[in-house]
Image 1 (cartoon, rainbow, N blue to C red):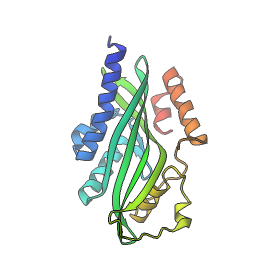
Image 2 (cartoon, rainbow, N blue to C red):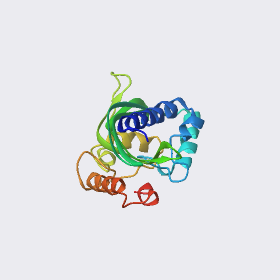
Image 3 (cartoon, rainbow, N blue to C red):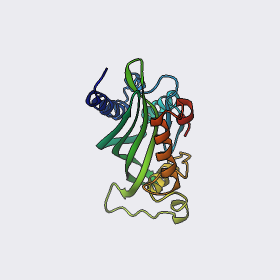
Image 4 (cartoon, rainbow, N blue to C red):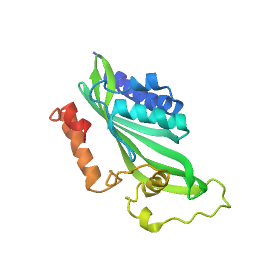
Length: 207
């Protein structure tokens, strides 16, 4: 049987591979990080099966959509063949906002429901937690006037990311987990049930 350290190292590698392969457009290898049946991704602009996420990400990548990720601290709770993994991250995206090229950076955590499948750890569900964000013109001398009505439609943890993505033509989901609040408390409760074995992969995959 693998040791706890071996499991934690494999889980960290799994999360690292997700970011490197997705941002590089290495779609065949990116597909291998997901549970082949139950894999589910939730993001500001997409909620659905991993296979569909891979397809739309590839389409966006080919069109020049610029969404990148960077990882920081990492923690894994492991119980048998199940794990809940949290990894500090940033999401950065560059796009034109009302004719002004801008960068948005969102800081948060990837919250991953994982299980061992055919001897290897896989992601069953990925739910980002959005903690704070900011939006800046690429050219510091450019002036960007934001629509406060649109901006305030979204939670504070990702309102600038949502603003840029909405302007870029994405449909952005509201009510996603932030640093505090009911949505993140519900997510933590779902994670505890997953670790305890009282929730099935199908139940957690759709949140």
